[in-house]
Image (cartoon, chains in turn brown, yellow):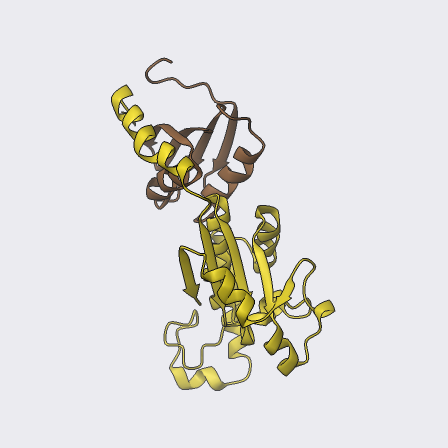
Length: 80
Length: 180
């Protein structure tokens, strides 16, 4: 896989929402994704920077990459 | 400006070995919460933690006891309130004694609901729907129901009725137990 581009299978946009909505929206989306598929998650809640890696680890998912820019956090998570 | 944080292959592999593999070896984690308060501000922490636990792939259960039972009472869950009286951190910043004036609880409740809505925080009703969607187990305390005259049909659909022994049995197998 290329270093910085991951093609997502599903995009979840939680910008403007606070904890716990980023991980809850991500989980509801991940539930209907097949194993190995990639979820792209957008969040603006500063807590998500700590929450999303913790959530991914807890679910056994792989956090492929995270990006920060203009107050938006972007995460690429592969379903384990 | 966008800053990319790339995780090198070795880090990803190490991550997988340390966390993903070890996760697969362990059984599903469990969260057990007692919700004992029936005010708007105290209903949120229990529901937020329970839905988050479920979203993390954990088994999550909330045992609603005493005033906490109002949170799953059909007639009451939409009308939870926050009181400014004896609450120095209340959303209406007034001298505390004024909290006793009729209408102040109503005002504080309206203000808190407005603040939640403005911040896109789900309502209690929406949090309960999320509990349903994520498979959070909601349990009403049978003793509270007996004392307060609450019947099973007064509780929201899907809420089961159990006693202290059943909760403790469940909690004894939980990694995280919280009393709210």
